[in-house]
Length: 88
Image (cartoon, rainbow, N blue to C red; front, side, top):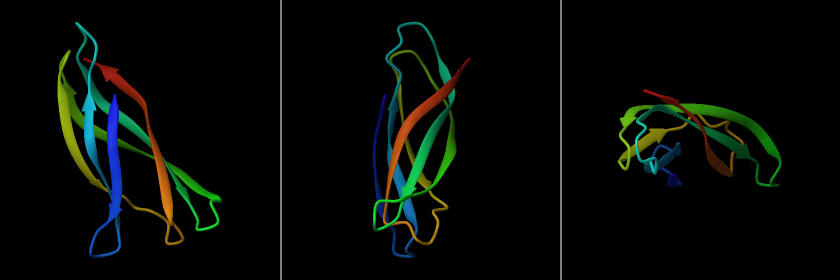
């Protein structure tokens, strides 16, 4: 489960910050992939990108993360979703 929010830092760069929880009872996940879609001020989709959080998340566990994003200059907002993970 992905719980996150984004903001612009003092340098004007977008930062995605949140936590990833593993609700599985036996499986450890790693290298969690988050898909990010960037939108213009007119809500037009500019680009889609992926980032990977290189952490092991044990069954029932959680990890926090903070990631600077390389957003296109025209970005006004973004959306994100957990799109994959590897099994350890």
